[in-house]
Image (cartoon, rainbow, N blue to C red; front, side):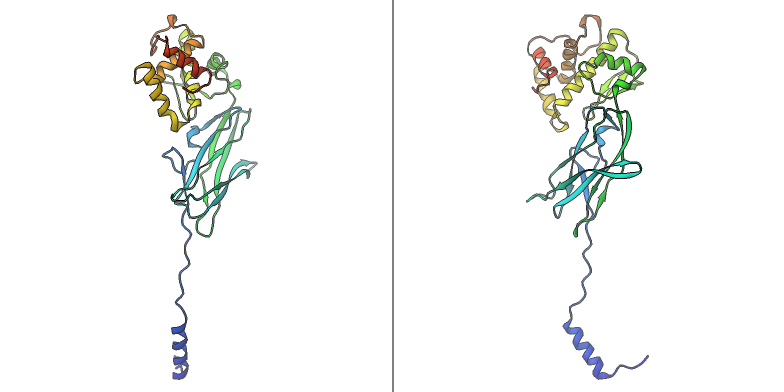
Length: 276
């Protein structure tokens, strides 16, 4: 090794004492996107349950956790193998909160029966990394295109629930999802029993469409008080079904047949599209 002259070495040491030590670059923090009111933090349109009814645009709200700055992003749809931006989005940092404001993103609206793919992108900043959701695949279905058993169900409810996803259920009971408003109707019912099952589930669609998922405990509380039970939502759906044309004398296995007074008033109000 070649020797460094003592004078030059002294000069280098002196300069080193004057220069600050190099600081490591600050790494951008990871972005966390949370679906408001859902435990599935990263799933886009998780509340849709994989389906969107025709003539409807499904929406779900998201906020950013531990936000460090105002953020921007886009909702995109895959068209011809390319991601096309549907709308621009912006989240704002809230004073005194670790979370941003919530932003609602919505699917496109179509009358076609078609499969669409969506993704949500949150742009990077100097302090935060970009975030891209997993691709959400949604089946947009027009119930007017249904055939067979689903067509029979749809013809029964179309006056009151013209735009609703209907799936055939292999089990003996029918049910409705309060977030996606999707009806799963059992194949077993026929005749008057099918009419009851279909219109009872249609009543649930109309109930839940008036109250966002976060507000549905309020719906349950009010109906339980009116019907003097813990199954007020079910009893109200029966009373609504009777008003939609079900003959209570021709069916069995209902939650109630008593729809007098406040019970009937509540059912009529919900059927008319008004909150309690």
